Each structure stands twice: as C-alpha cells, then as structure tokens.
Length: 325
Image (tube, rainbow, N blue to C red; front, side):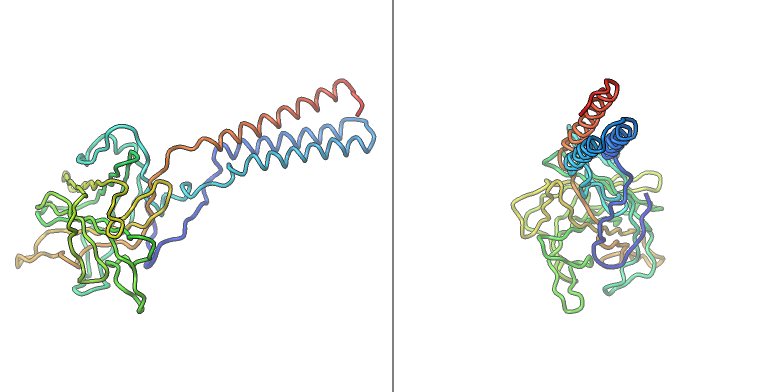
C-alpha cells in the first residue's frame, strides 16, 4: 500500500481500523440485551416497580458485558494502520533468510514507503533513482528476516541497500543519528548490503562521519535481481548480547526503522552517481514483530454473547408464562 511522507521524527500511531469480529460480537450482545429489556417492559402488564426491577437487571448485565469487553475494545497497537508500520508476522518453519524469492514471503504483510534524495549532509544529491521501497518481514520467535523490494533499471556491482534502527531508548535522527539543533541523539544500528560484496555489514553511527563496522558481524543479507527489480533479504536474531550496539527486537513492541538505497550506475565520466551520502533515503517509520496470537478477546466476546442470550431467554420465558415478579 502507498503511504504519505513526512520529514522528521517517528509518526504517531493511528488506530482507525474498522471494528473487528469480536468487537462486533459484543455490540450484538448489547443490542440483544437492550431489545429484551425494552420488549419486556413494553409488553408486560406489570406494576411499575416490577418493570423498573427488570430494567435495572438488564442494564446491570449490560455493564457486566462492558467489563467482559474491556479486552476486546482495547485494540492493541498491532491494529495500527499498516501505512505507518512494517509488521513482521510470526510463522512456523524455516524463515527464507537467504531466499529473496521464497514462497514464504507471500504470508508477510506488504508496506510501501517513499524515498527521497539525501539532503542533510554533504555531498548532497538532487535526484535519486529509487522512489519507493516495498517491505515485508517475518520472524519465528528467534530469527528475523526483512525483505526489501524496489525498482532499479539496471543491475550494477555498486547497487546497495540498508536498514537503520535506533539503539536503546534514546531517540536519534534518521540521518545517521546526527545531532540536530544542538540536541545530541542516540546511536543508530545500520545493516548494509552491496551487490558486489554479496553479504551484509553490521555497523553503527552517531552522527555524520562516524559510521564504522562492528567487531562482531551477525547480520546476513542476500540480493536477487530480475526484470528491473531488486529483492534484498536481511536476517538476524531478534535479540543478542550486544545491547549497546545492536537493535533489540522484542515481539509486541514498536521500534523505529528507516531505509536507504543506492543505484550503483556510473555517469559518462565513469564516476558513481550515487555513493556514500548520495542516496535515496526515508525518515523514521515503525516496525513491530508480532507476538504469539492472543485469543482471550474472543473468549470475552463469547462470554458476553452467552450472557446476553441467557438473560434474553429468561425474560421471554417469564413473559410467556405471565409469571409475576
């Protein structure tokens, strides 16, 4: 899906999705209870006190249903619109960590993000080849795989791609963690791939000119080019022991992610058109590894509907028998 661009910072999550199935079930339960209460009070020729009693009982049960539905209505952040987040769904079986064309990628939600020329640091670039990037992600509870897909008219040895993450809790600018407005940001973790190298480099930066490879290398990457399109898959464990240098991905929590792409073509003079800071970049977006499924909201919905149905049955039965209070 297409998304709208923004300049700085992480976007606020938006949770404006349609009601899901268990929320609709609770709405149905509310409707049944209220209908039963109204039918009884209007159809029964009882004393005023009796009707007030049943009305009170009905709305008490409505309140109980509301309590049951707390877990249903409190839609988690995972329901945020995919337009601002990459969702790594949890799957069983082997991840396609070295296969950009693997069939398993069909199970991954698709998000698309705009790219623009890097203009924050010299040497700047006024036009970039790649305009957007499509992102998919999967994890199995231990390993994480992220697939980038983007259009590039030609395959070149210096074609490259990178992912960027914040490290720790301190916010950082998406431009290599560069301090902005005299505000020092935190470090960033960068996973870099280049076609001619055929592998990933795990790096850190805290401002322009500070980029360096880590002593340990635990990120893998593999690219595949066909029909004017690059597919590059990055993989690493969700977490590791290098908490001061590497991003730690905890299922269920949102982190920030950014993207960079280099078109490795050369100009008429034989110089690379895009290299170093001359590249297509994004600002920060959200990333989330999905936790294992939680089915408790469905249980709340079933309990609410069952309670509503039971109360309605009792009211109708009393009406048919003409039973006094």
